[in-house]
Length: 180
Image 1 (cartoon, rainbow, N blue to C red):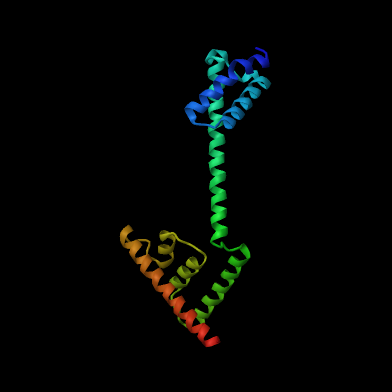
Image 2: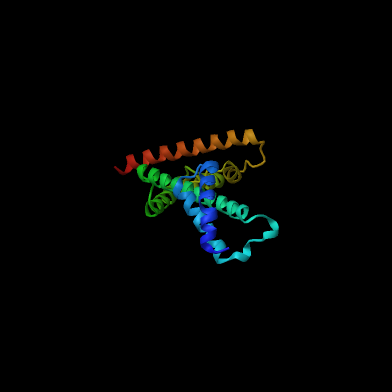
């Protein structure tokens, strides 16, 4: 079948079905169908007439192409929305995050030097918290609580996390008051 015949025969039918069944807008349905027909014209051997009619083959391929385009557009919209949200909420740059990490390391060293942070487990848990670790399991492992039952583990990790954050907050206040 000549390329113009394929376009004339199937183009409008497939576009119309994509719009009706998938809810595609006309541009997306048209683009998907054109891409599929061009692919067929350039590589007709990919179509096996023993497996079904040409219309079914093109329709299925156009449907998959349209769904792929929709997923890509949705993912792009989510990325854009996240980026906008990050910008709006003032997400920190990598340099600022690194500076925070260095500051946290210095603060932890001062906690150890002043014997405020005595336990190696507390030190490791606080290090994980300061680098952004949120996993209950990882914090439990650092605190030596991994053997507790799940619900008890969650409560214990939260209690230790809150205690360490309060300690850090108190130390930060004392440290800034002493340096003022």
